[in-house]
Image 1 (cartoon, rainbow, N blue to C red):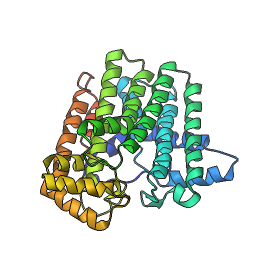
Image 2: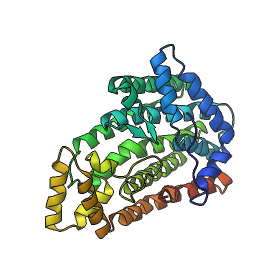
Image 3: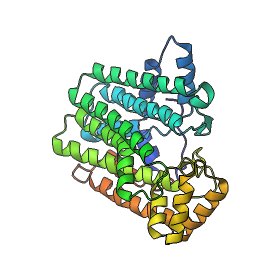
Length: 337
């Protein structure tokens, strides 16, 4: 699906190590995706080409391939096809996300909805999902079909739940974790469980790999949300403050609300009730975020999920892929730069 965003090896080499470990298969994943997105409808071709050119880390495909290798899957191309399927689900959700959030920039590129409109973006997102389901049906594994189809439903539920709580400065942490578990962690979990399913692993190993993916996904999303309040720079093509301007209550804001005074809480509620928040509002929020160390605390809470994720792999025999996957858990926290 386009080019992979290069990361500094000084930050955390585990991502690059995993990519190098399965690079020959990742190239084939890209080929499968390109083949599946062929369409006689010119607009679909234009939009998918543009969307996929914006790149990405392919972390979900890498997790599918890495967990397959860890579990002992060797024969055939099922891991390649299902890795493509997982990435297509993710790509479809991004198209839908950009419409919901009225986004016009992603990873430094104009979003498809900013160029071709919301209606086309929704339909092309649906097209990507339909291609994904074709791959699942052709694979023929009912367990994996149930897993990935139910995951698609979870992601949609997470989107709706987030919309339901939009503008709530007093959102409780439990509801926030429920949202990111559905929206983000569920696909991470499905990717890693798929690898175990491909290898015919026992239920214990399947459950542990699912736990690894789920908790990695939670840490990944918390870190991403913390980065939104981290500095005044653009990180990975994402301007900071995006969640704030869209009225999304994420963990740094929840921690801020927990620690702030009654007067400060009143201000937060008032700001988030607005139809539009200003740059001046954001500057004031940043001061409060820094006052109560909400970003640092968010990373500390993400570290809990990192440790749970890493420990889930403890029963697997020592191997290069196990070492890399365990090290990858820290990658989510090292994405500050």
